[in-house]
Amino acid sequence: MRGRAEAAYVGGMLIAEDLLLLLYDDETGKPVTGSPGLDYALAGAVLIELTLQHKLDITGPNSGEKPGRLKVLDGAPTGDAILDERLSYVVSKPGKKPKDQIGKLSKHLRDQLLTRLAERGVLQAEQGRVLGLFPVTRWPAKDARHEAEVRAQLESVLKVGTTPDERTGALIALMSALNVVPKVVTDAVDKRALKRRAKEIADSDWAADAVKKAVAEMQAAVTAAIVVSATAGASTGS
Image 1 (tube, rainbow, N blue to C red):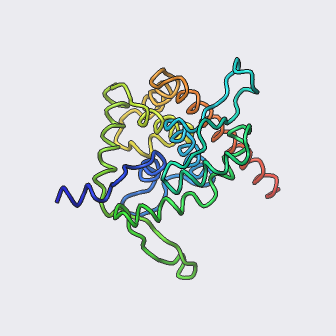
Image 2: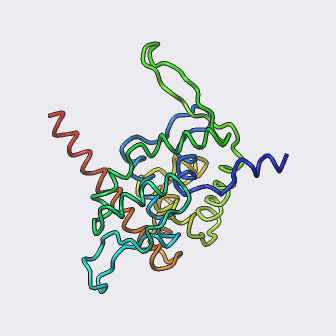
């Protein structure tokens, strides 16, 4: 039985895959937060992953380059199709701010991740209809063991005070930017304290400088993209 479980996770999970699992309800197969925030956060998670793999960096104030820009350190493929598609895009458009790229990088990303997780046997695709008319796909959990491990790490950091590793810290920072931490850790008695703890972690020194810088930029990019989208939606609706 253990061999079959390990086979489902060959190559490990991306941070974006872990984030997606946390943000989809295991029973209903529906996301616990809406678009475009979820999609932008997934794109941010991909960029953080590429930073962890030393493929990308964010330029600093004393780098001799414009600060806060995506910088390619190594454009060679990672071997992961989802990462490589986004890396190739950044390589083709160097020197851009993350907030200006995150929308493009999020395109089709959620569908690609959901499909791959279903192929791995982690989720299952269930076809249905809204109001009996409009087709919709739900993605309930099929094998929740990996997600349970991720949740255990999250709760250890958020409730017990364990120092996060870089992947867990990145997840918490992205969820904090989306303001969804209480929707993921649902049994917390004091939701304000939980949100405050998540923000403290996002702002603390739990990662190497390059990764911490990337996470901070992704948080800002996700927040900015959501604000721009909301503003545009309000203008369209008025």
